[in-house]
Image (tube, rainbow, N blue to C red):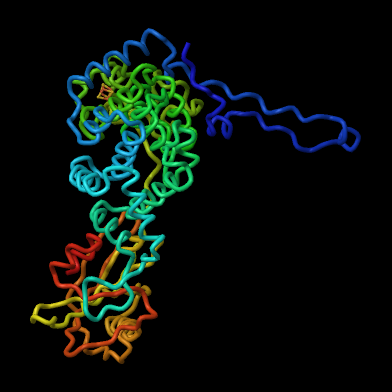
Length: 478
Ligand code: SF4
């Protein structure tokens, strides 16, 4: 019988156990042993897949649907056709890293370009190694006559290929991990999910499970946003789906459900179902291949209309996987009652002054100064117009003064605050920051010497700007 491992659930450990006395009598202090906490109770049966026949039927129905309806995607084609396990794993790995936080439709083009440039792990690693052993990480800049230090060309290529996908450090970590496989693991990718997660930088539990199941056929589950949604609906899990307790339960469930003979296809099918049928807002339950196994749908069809604690909940406030008693089942939401998340934190509000410095290039074309961001943190290694974070509550005149001081450091000559022209504001929403760029411009006459002690910088034409590794926010600024 398939049972979830209740002992793994952090929430059960936290919420379900009796307290253990910690005070000890003087007499008994050295001899009495404190009893271990009682094992937490397993989750109620309605949140489990405890019938082997149902599990078999769910696997069968889901795989049959996947075989018929799956989207034709380049990484799936590569994984299906590639006989070499390392090449297969690399093809899956690149796709999984790109797909983190990014839509499939956006990724396809980036993926094709990446695989064309670095079709194998060896090619990516080799490029990195060649550059580093030749000591050519920093090299004369190919772009502008007045630039000082320039970036590592390879890193620049990676960033340029990645620009637009967001979360730029992912591309860099992929490159670092490829180097590690070649230089420390004799060119062979680790062969299990556990080893992948342990040995490769940037590979977490989900990515490791996806690579191992799709590339090597290891019977291990995966849990991503789509899987969370599908499983929470299939088993009416209404507790906070971002909590460790629920996530642990879902991993146990995914590992128990995964088809033993076609684990990679099963995992992709579950994710595909979440991406195309069991979507967040208006799921297509009528077309769902696993609707007969879905507790949320059953509940929707047979629930009462009143928003009161329901007899279908395991016990008001007592079940760690049911909706909290304060937020009972809402019949107007139907299956979209699940999953539920704790209220999202408001993004922090920031303002940044940024200056578009413009000069005439050798053929009279406009050129703009861009500078490279630090190699860690937000938008690591990307290029931007010289920018400076603004303290709250600064008046316009004060903003100009602050920005002029900042530019003076770049240009090595005084910049009059009054010469900065306020052009407007650009708002860009990062996942956790509501950023407003206060945009200034400064036309320059004559050449200036940039301080080589500062971060890499270069002059670019508009065309070169768009081909550079610049963020979407900076494109908006231009
Ligand atoms: Fe999702 Fe509806 Fe299918 Fe249930 S029946 S898994 S809610 S699409």
